[in-house]
Amino acid sequence: MGAYYFYSDYVLEDGMWKSKSVHIENGLFTRSFKNMEGIQEIHVEDFWIGPGKVYVDIEEPVFHALSPETVAQKYLYRGCTLLLCQLPIRSSISYKKRFRAFKENLVNLPIDHMVVPTIPVRILRPHHIKYFGRMKVPFIGVELACSEDLNSVKWEWIREAQQFSQTPIILFRRDRKEGLDSKELFKEWKELCRIHSIVTLQDPVREFPLTKHALRVTGISPGKGELIENGCADYNLFQREKEPIIDEDSHFRYHKSIPIVTVCRGQVVKENHLVNTEKMQGEYMEVSIPRHFIDR
Image 1 (cartoon, one colour):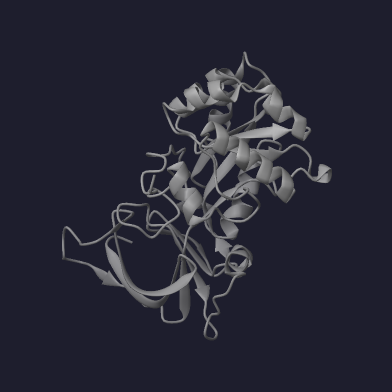
Image 2 (tube, helix red, strand yellow; image 1 turned 135 degrees about the horizontal axis):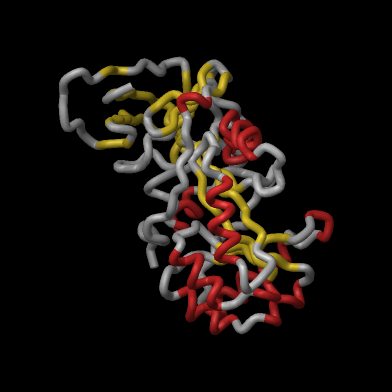
């Protein structure tokens, strides 16, 4: 679409409506245009605008899918412009090879993507943290079979390994039926992280789009997930039939809302509810600097 801009009084940012002029050039959000010739104005009066959604593939994991491309299209249909694909790690020996092979298997995904390694806490070692930090993954998930497993790890060693990359470590439940996502267990995890100065996320990762705080702690933003200068020009247009409501359930409602139009890197990849995968060749992406925009 070249260089273009639009203005809207209904841009969703930080759970609030903002009036904003959005400029796009060369697939990126920009504050000003390098070349003023041929710039187009796009009219979006009938829509409200939200950033491209960033999902972890919790509801339908790509790793276990017969057709990863089909699964990715489902997320894209919901307005996802970056998909974090879980990679189960079950060994302290072959995990590097497994990581490289999984990246290669994702090469045909029609959506930008990252890899999130998930490791049973009992086999978690400092070399896992160092390696995946060097690979610039957004975070590392640790899986629990029971809360007592937290005592099986030398967390001071994990923190020392984490210092190099600041890659967050988060809690993943092994089995939904076990109730390991309880508030009590998460509080226990947060207290452990506080005691050992482990970098983690302030909220559990669920099937909803990642929050702004999570995007910034992980280093996914500014590259993805926000309408921010030099970030990928990813956004969604939602039909605006009346005055949109903002309340405490807005994040959940944004997750459930299906956009009419989805734009990724400045190009329309979904229009009138139809995904055009011919225009979308997903790229494997790495995070920038974790916690770069977070007050320390």
